[in-house]
Image (tube, rainbow, N blue to C red):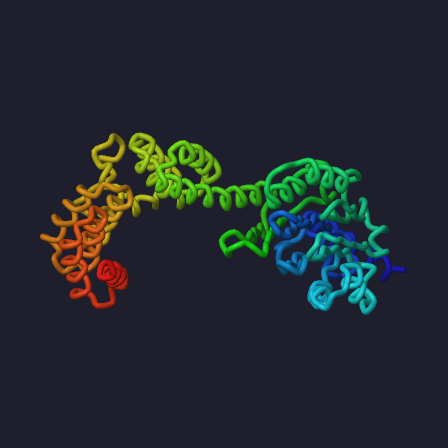
Length: 411
């Protein structure tokens, strides 16, 4: 009796000390169980498969999300087992249904009563199951089907799955936006009853380039949902700023203005992208706004001073006079300043500054390259060739100069 009481005490002690980091079944059963909720879905227009998931353990994206564009996707939660996805993809590739693909592993799994698995095939067909042991865990568990999606979870508030499903069905936007909105709605409805530490969002498509595939993970945080939303904002913001620069090149000012406003909002806090925003404002002729963004960058990150020499062009503006000290510029700093002038189409200023620097540093291959490229932009092939050849003479490995010279020769 005394030994039994000691055992109970140890279990209670473990439970009390770890309640915020682990769920009760994982402690009592000594298994790698994640109290989790998830949504997986297929977008038949974009040909994308996606999963959003949250758990009260660390790095949920490491073990619960499996997607093969053109084949399908699997979400494996509770006590995770990657073989459901590994075998599942093989079964789908062999022409089996999503139900049979999942049940193939379930039939061989002596611990299937601890699993929660959902899958979706190449056409949006879905199947899911919840292990029988999950019904004894505190909170609700289960899954709901909808058109091209499944929501599932365990140890949840009563209305979590219903609200997740309703949110996904009634919201517009990209698949990633709808998945994340569904996950956030589930959390607001009560989520997993002992809290969350990690979240993940993965979207992959057969038509997506690598930079459009989404694989976002918050591996440990007290605010994982907010952090995941910020990551998706940054992903979309990076796309918006690139679209902005393209619209500017195409002289579509109204579209560029709209996209730039969206980009700046989405990229708030990612100071590494502020230089692109500055370039966009300068290309649109808005120097005052460009200076405002630079000041914001400096206020958010003191290390941003390393980038300041590139904006030598703006040195006379209030707030930058004291920050941009050309006496401290290295050769690379000057070349960055020349390169920015090239980027923002200030070709005369670019040429003038490059010539000035070449008098001081005639051995700089990169300065000659930038000068040659500037001459190309104003259709001065003769001077362009002189400086590109000089750049290669000074540095035979200057591949950028070689490329421009080769292009010039073909024309």
